[in-house]
Length: 285
Image 1 (cartoon, rainbow, N blue to C red):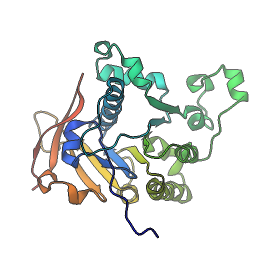
Image 2: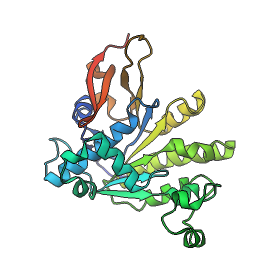
Image 3: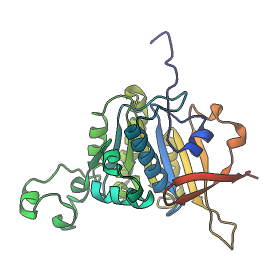
Image 4: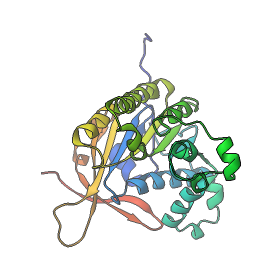
């Protein structure tokens, strides 16, 4: 056992209003679950982080004080190819105002696992494949019985230290991983394994998960398996205007560094050009 404990390393999320709340950013070596109700801003939070990272790298911006730049930025998707993903970001950030948009996106390492995800389904190959149908069916990408879960893990373990990896999404894996108790066990234990390995490899993994899809008990099993959870939802006590909201549900190793005044429910918004941002807050009763 070493005589010293490594100093904590922070990676900014590059969402300024969120980094301010988190005391600068997220701990390297963490697994983070963005648990979001549909449309509440979870996807946009991740896309804003990706866009701002890529923009800052392109412009040669220095990392925020007290944080360290990741070695690489990775995005793993089960259902979207790179073109689809970039189209979504382009719409969110008015890409016509960014003449260097393609250059910005080139800093993102994108892994499309669509062939592994759909490979054992009845979905026609030409709906998701990257080759012509005949050649694609002969040369199918590796797949497993868990929608690509083991392939995601195998790819993550090959990435450089201090990388940030976004996984989109755990929700897509659920039809495979909730079939039997054994399949569910494999998902939970793999997430726990990645939480342990992330500290060994000094990588940060961000998972997207749609809230309310799992039973309460299953959702809490995944919450318990990761280091940090950002909970995003629609305000329930309103009859006039729907409001997106967010709070920090847990963050192992980071909560003591967060100002107690920031342990509140935040109002958030998603806007064209700016993406995701925290606007104001209301105290938890």
